[in-house]
Length: 134
Image 1 (tube, rainbow, N blue to C red):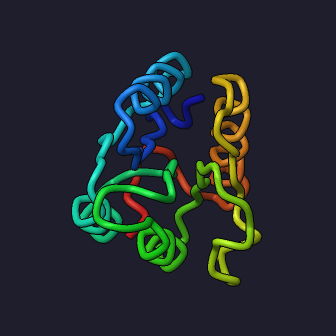
Image 2: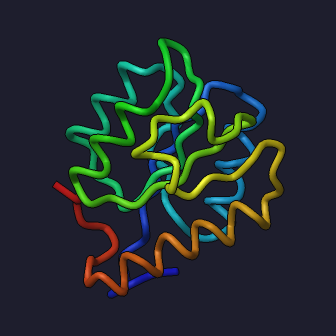
């Protein structure tokens, strides 16, 4: 999915190497560009503040803690994201419970469907692919 010849960039925050590879493969097959993957909370926070990407896939439990602070930064930037986790709503902060979540294990087709939805939301909101959200 491209807009004006530019490719959507997807931040990937995932600390399990095998899952990160599957996510990367799916993103590449869609013709999108990967930012990351990053496996550590500090790296994810740095990218959430200053990285250039259009949307994000966030594993909740990563090295160094959880990605809730990353999600909060993305919400401030107006950057769409989805969580990937094996946990249910009870473990999430109340303000993040309504965010899109893929439950592990999930398929590549489920991930692709959710990424297309995120990219569609960018287009509907008038944001151009390949532009920083900051």
